[in-house]
Length: 158
Length: 104
Image (cartoon, rainbow over all chains, first blue to last red; front, side):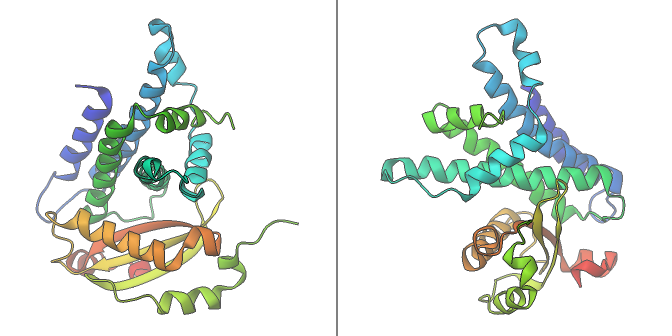
């Protein structure tokens, strides 16, 4: 199983500990972080697949910067849909992925650094569901030209 | 001169538009705060308490997707107010136990 899938499974596992009514904050926080990194690693691994030399792909994937990726995703979220009706479903999926990335990144930052925030299981499950939906959506559009452009843009090249 | 988002410059207008939102199924309480996100971008954080039925794990993704879509379409936080929207959810029974002020 790919690392990003393992991360998502790990997030689910952590979120379901101590059911029904006694979740530990540490488990919920780590679940949120794992959900974000599931999407993060899926996208960076996908981008690295385009790098010709297999032995350098892990190094390539480490070149991505969280802040630049957020900037790219915010631009994708706010741009109008394409004029060509055939491209609209792809653009909608891409927008959902970009929106989810921004949301998950903020959640991850709060989970990892803001100890004043109290997490509920509902919030964590919603976060995991968003990561799952984005990852599933990506697998559908990943070969499309617009999706491949998005991977390139995630590096912060424009 | 730094750009001031409309949502920060005109908070009363923002509240008026929030109050005018059509009823959202499953929402027991909806509050918001305006603040910067982790990277310093202006943002609006929604703190939404759901009924226990609406927060049931079997329908939670559909519930939250519908609420996010409705608020995003009706309010357009990023386009109209210059604020990145972030949504936080919890169930009524969780809030009864956690009593976090920001959720009301």
